[in-house]
Image (cartoon, rainbow, N blue to C red; front, side, top):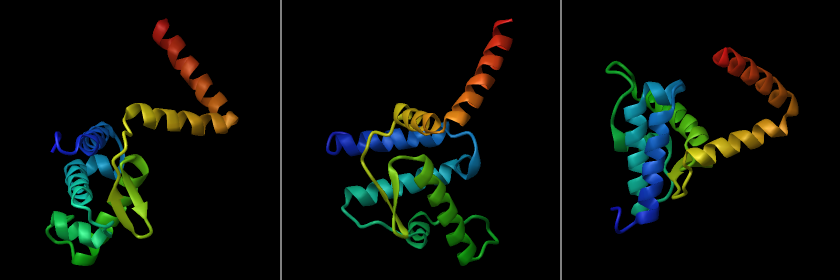
Length: 142
């Protein structure tokens, strides 16, 4: 894969790394499932398929939320997980009601620069963040 589709594979590796670095939320709880979803969307991208909806993703991955969960519950679970992945993983994008893999770098640096832009756009949040950071820094030094 890496020699035939180097850009796509590098983007997949970056997405997997981003998933492993997430420390909160649904993605953290269902990390293995998120990696399988990413792998599935990556393979669908490589094969040239169109974006897929949460029900189709569930049919491909076939890992239920729990043993007792009904089909509708499982689909809703995948929908929530995909929604969060689309927000936090740059390579997973939402197109209408479907999701797809996009081969873009999206490493940690991209994620941080995006957050920095958002923070600077709201100067009040920036000042608050800066005060907290300076307080923590001064405690660490003393």
